[in-house]
Length: 283
Image (tube, rainbow, N blue to C red; front, side, top):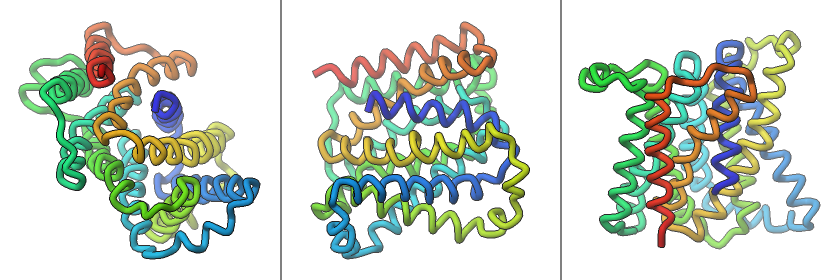
């Protein structure tokens, strides 16, 4: 999950630079098709392709997981058209609170007072970043359009984590990941078919292709496997706790890409999210 948070952060920074150059549905349909191909190649290389067919029992399970993923990733790139990457990453850190709620509703996973304190602390830090350390904006609840759009994607992602454990019927994680990615690509492709046809793929600048390849391999096939692997072994709230590191990773990505750093007051919110992570991981 530590690796997951670092890889996810890269998609915020790269996505923020190309979000206005390609339709979110077109980018995500291609990236998930590539992701499924990568995971499929790994399954073949490991000699496990025979497990792919039996895993198609109750295919509606993948439609649910793929639908949740489709909502999350499309709203992410739609939100990045107007929301700064650090703010979008802060919205993403609200998912542990929601994941804890879904974990209780779906799996009856209970959380103690310390866990709820940590989740509340992380949420406060996230809100501080989202409202850019502006108390008047916070009181008036003046949230940006991009952040508001992405919030609903984060709700879908929070539900996804416990749903993995609910819907998995003993399938190997790689095979389960393959069908999830393939279904996500199909759902987004059908929904955004007109965007796929309208995109001038040959005219896209190299950074767009770098973003597609990065999100396909690092921020899709790899992270989906990582979060499914962790979801089978950790409580939902603890799995998503590592998302509190995402704004910090995004700051490093932004520096590496030559982007300006947010004001010091905003960085205080990032500090709160790191404190929340420390509380959540304490035994």
